[in-house]
Structure formats: C-alpha cells, structure tokens
Length: 316
Image 1: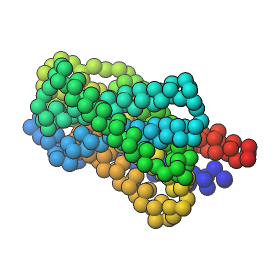
Image 2: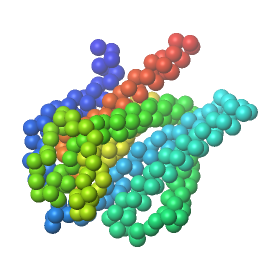
Image 3: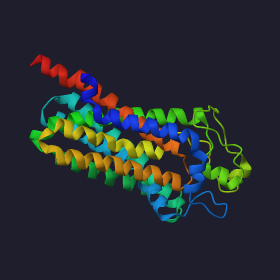
Image 4: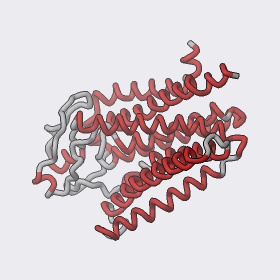
C-alpha cells in the first residue's frame, strides 16, 4: 500500500499506457493508414510537423543525461567528496561521458538534417568537424546549465540526476535490444511496397531481418525492420525524469507539480504522434517506447530511494 501511494503518478501513467497498448493490439494497422501522411510512394513524409519532431524529438535523451552528469559532477566537486587523483579520474569520466553522449546526439541531428535537406549533404572530414563542433557547443551548454544549480539545491538535484541516468540507461538499452529481436516492418516500408502482407502485430517475434537491395534502391532505409519499439518515443520520454523534481523539491508546490506533469505527458505524446504521422511507427510501437521510459523512471526512483535516500535517513 505504501508503495502504491508513493508511486501513484508513475503507476497511473504505466497503467494508462498498458490500456493503450491493448487498444493498439486490435487496430494498429488501421490507425497508421488513417494517420500517416505519406504520398507518391515515398518512404519519408514531407509533413512539417512530423519532420520537425523527427529531427529534434530525440534530444531529451542527450540533454537530460548530459545535464544530470553535470549536476553530479558539481555535487561531488563543490562538496569535496573526492580529491587528488580520484577527483581527476572522476572529472575525466564525466567529461568523456558527456562528450560521447553529445557526439552521438550531434551525429543523429546532422543525419536527420541531411535526410530532410535542412543542410547540404556533407561527408568525410567536413561531416566529422560539424558533428564535433555541435558536440563541444552542446557539452559546454549543458555543463553551464548544471553549474547554475544553487548550492542549497545541489543535493536534491543530484538525486534527481541519478534517477534520470538510471532511467535513460534502462530505457535506451531495452529499446536497442528489443528492436532487432522483434524485426517488425515499418508502416512506411509497407506503404512503399503497396503491400501490407508483411505487417505483424507488436507481440510477434520475427527475428533479425535485413531490408533487401531492391527496397534500398527505392529509398527505403536500412532500419525498415526496426519499427518496434519506437526509439524516438523512448528517447523523448526521458523527460519523465522531470517527474522526480516535485518529489525532491517539495517547496515548489502543487502548481509546479501539475505543470511539470503536463509538460512531460504533452511532450511525449507530441513526439509519439509525430512518429505515426511520419509512418515510422504504429501506435503500439510508440506506446511501448514511452512505457520503457516510464518503467525505467520507476526503477530509478525506487533504487535511489531505497539505496541512497532511505539509507541516509537511517544513518542519521
């Protein structure tokens, strides 16, 4: 009973997503046919709303963990938790993690910008330098944001940061492990074929499959069989980590609690819907993508609460 009361919001979100998944099990294909904005046999939609979120929808999975790493660094550094070689090693580890995370995020950003012709196609050293430039700018920006956390809030912020990192590791790890295992065909690939016989329900395990050459020549991407679950949605749902803020900053009050919850749900739903508009995912794909992050948040919150927060209370 205590567990339910302490996690009522997260459990309610998970429950709602499970209900949505049941609904999707019966009407996935029909919903995609009604919602997807594809035309002329093209694999990629030109829908402005969908394109915008395809480019930027994943950014929370790079922003939230980056700021979280920065917060943890300043918590350790300002609190003098480490010194000497240990501090140098810790600082190097944080720097490598942030740079690596933002390099990958910058790579994806440039990739989508080129795909949708927001920038000219670049290759080789020019592409690498562009990605590295974005990487350095983003890393410096998120580190600066983390440095603005006031001293009296740093401990609570570090707890929230740790929850966010655990959530990100779980949801993204699970997403990437599941995709090739299920090998589900994307709706937009079936649209290009004008043949929906390859459609399978989300719970059908197809195994790893490769897109044949004739489809690659038609413009289908190599990830045509990686529909389930939605990586964009699980990445966008990293904003669920913000739900920890009202819990560990109770002075913010009820209005901030409502505002943060509304933002988290609205942002995730927007990105999820945009993936369906692009024909990249079915309703069940985006639902499970969001579900993985919601479960990841619950796991992170429980672990941090049990292993750190409650242990400190007992020691005091």
